[in-house]
Image (tube, rainbow, N blue to C red; front, side, top):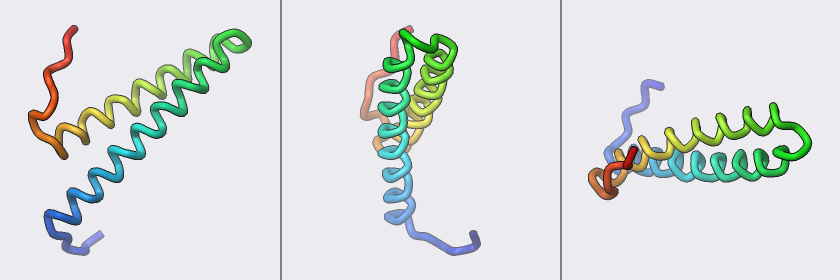
Length: 74
């Protein structure tokens, strides 16, 4: 963890993390949809996990592309 990385490498790592978060969010959304009819508790847990990955994606996306997106509406 003491390796020095340049800004381009740091950006690549952030982008990989952002891409992974998007993939995981989609996977958990799909899982929630599959479980909705048979396991409501499992579906709720999957939705919460999807929200978590969505939050991670949004943060990393804002770092990678500052100001590139409009503010979310409440």
